[in-house]
Amino acid sequence: MTTAFSELLIAFEVHSVERIRAILDAGFDVKRPVEGKTPVTYLLEMYFRSDRFPGCLRLLLDRGAALDDPKLESVLLNDPGALEAAVKRDRTLLQHRASLASAFTPLIGATLLHVAAEYGNLAETEKLLALGADVNARAATDAHGMNGHTPLFHTVNSNANRSAPVMKLLLANGARTDIQLQGITWGKGFQWETTCFDVTPISYAQLGLLPQMHRTEHDCYENVKALLQASGRAIPPLENIPNRYLAK
Image (cartoon, rainbow, N blue to C red; front, side, top):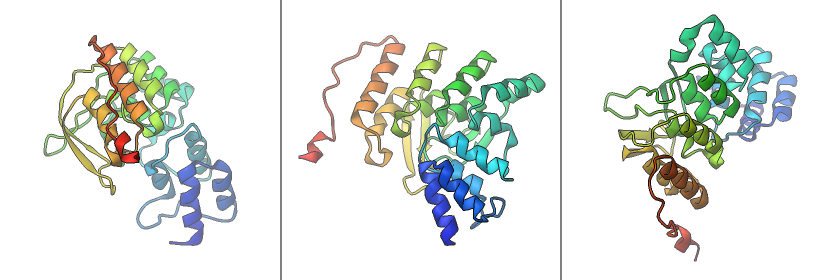
């Protein structure tokens, strides 16, 4: 792995458009695979989520990079205008199924709404719902019957709770909180891969308390409260912070 590519990965990890541009200006080829993957794929797989991600992706695309699935471009760029134009050209985009590596909740056989929810792209989520996307569409299940989750699952346990506004929007548009999966594989293919069995959106939100999830107790319980409220259930006192004693 070259020094330039190592520096590019760091720039990807913090979503620094300026640092990426400097590396590309110095001659790095965005179309050249490194260890079997293109730079744009590395960017998509990064752990971090932020509003700066679309700018990083746009820069790579402008410099000649290409997505493995071009139909995801407007969603990943959080560009509702481009999405609306694309759907007007081809209504089947709302049923399109995509598969890409995800550091967190799986994106296998996922709709555009799953992708928007995973990356916390609120504007794109709003546009997809307005265009008629199915709020309770199910992702693919694997050979063991795992996954098959709805977009809501991507929002209840997100990096830095980025997708909480998307969660509330999906709930307001009829996302079901009572769907129970046989299981879901968190971080498939990454070092933190974790199999979670018999999960609902509520239990999946609480699983953010697992250390490998890297979520805060406050965010986990705020999401649990929002999900319980949306489902019409009573919200009991949530005073038990199970990891607090570890700090003593």
